[in-house]
Length: 416
Image 1 (tube, helix red, strand yellow):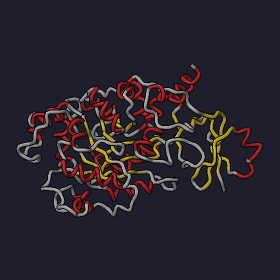
Image 2 (cartoon, rainbow, N blue to C red):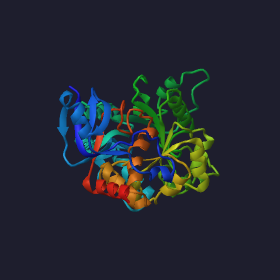
Image 3 (cartoon, rainbow, N blue to C red):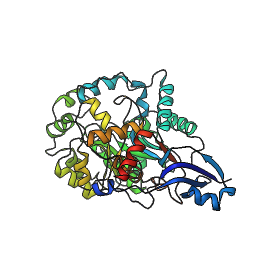
Image 4 (cartoon, rainbow, N blue to C red):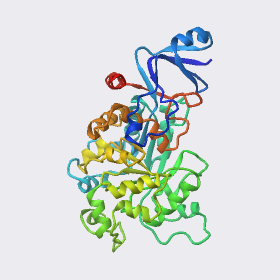
């Protein structure tokens, strides 16, 4: 039987496109008061006032009255590291990027209790209103898929993008004419999870590169090409720390010292910054999701905007590690598509997306309207999730329930 969900207010964002300017981010919210969301077989039939519904359709729907709550489109966590959930409280925070990475590296492996840590992290995601999570994985894609299906049982859409992460340096790339997928499976070029990549018929898997300083340029290019050919998003960490910049520019510094023996020797110098390097390798286009981007110059922002690459901001993770604060308002003014992610429990206190939204609002001096869009319609656009992002006819019937304090702020913004 079709279902109707009643709420005090339903923020629909109906008819909107992804917001790529301050004006679009701060625009009034499209919403319906004392409303019902109508759905059948997991697809939205419409959103309308309860009084209208009661006159026309009440007998044809099973009504679930959710009480005095505010519904919004499902939240999108565009960057997460669930397989590092067991590292909560075990890494060095507040001392900069290299001390944090040095504390993480010996611990980032399979350990007893790992499944329980991932399960708890998944519950936190779901309880905060997340309808889709883009998770970066190098060891546990099968386990995370199994646990996600269990946690989101009955969800109208599959709740995950599995970014299978490529880490490491390599011999020369595939021979001319060799299939890209076969090259990606070959030998020890990539991490074990990427070397055993599931058949690419699954629409929920994509390849990602860890970073310019930790993944062979040939691997980054091959993975990007693989994603582009299939219309999937390619993700990589970019412009996250000053140590990254120093390592790429001079082939020296604390990050180079930490990774000596892992990186090739000598590590090739690049006179430009990380965004210049990514552009030179052909990694920036509308299929690219660049994560963190704390250290963007005005030129970097222009490049990302011109290439239509999306940027995922992780404000609490950046603050905890001590790498600085992204210039979100400047990025928005440059026309960059921005979205939000929690990163992992190795660098953030929880995976609660509504807490991440509040942090983004405060740290970046953004409006509540703006961060709601970053965490919903923009996240859906960045990950190419056509069935999510708004609550309107034909979209998936997946929604979030906003906490009262944040909902009140949205209401206040709408009235003022």
